[in-house]
Image (tube, rainbow, N blue to C red; front, side):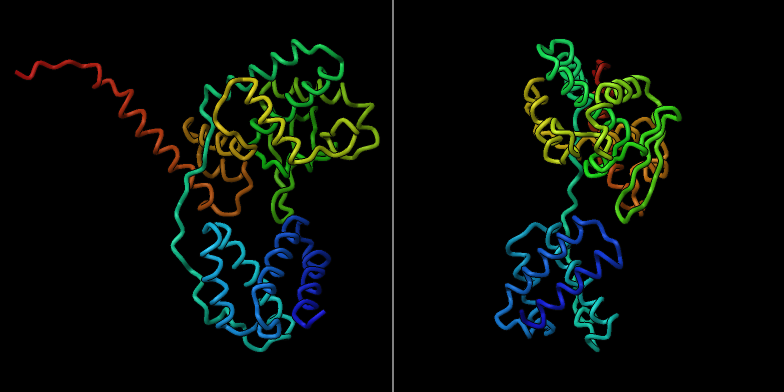
Length: 308
């Protein structure tokens, strides 16, 4: 093990044990840092500004801007740690301009009618379940999707919910977001509450040994990938051709609230965004909807005026 590799491992231990970062964040740091190590011809030259600049150019040739931004941030955080621990005297990033023009991609949302089709199919499958096992799966899947759409939470937040995080007496859900930030969201829709109560009652025996709220058929924590597959499965059954991901429920939730004139700062708190700038991307989606309405739905289109 060379010096650079050893320092990376020490840094990752620091992130896990001292900063208490999310395991997924630590995994991303690990991938990004060892990727930089692999790029270097001589590992001991990892502090050279020229090598870092060449690596950033290399990243731009291989990855999309969002991925490049994350990989640069991983490297920058690592060198900040080295400076903080006085392992290096001068941080090479102090003289590297990492800013670059990033294309702004609007979040992808699910059309309202597709949401209706999707939920209709979920409940239809429950109604027509042929076996006890199919019925139980449908009850769980309905609870998952209803909660996902009711709160706009991230898929990782949903799968990490513990039993004590959901209070169906007070009708609240406690969510631990990025950076272990905690937020509490009220559950105000009766159908959502009914779906969660039915799931809780149906799975109370099977989930006895698991601390997580949502479980798989083996009684273990439900995985992100299982939910992704679940969504694709029901979208196909509902005849929805659009590729739907869990995060699109979050985007759709936020956009629909904006279109209902909910203040953006409330939406920011509900979504768990640290900065209002992150939430403001949904105003662009709403503006796109506004243009669609004014072009296609404007009452002026109905007026036939004799000009002459």
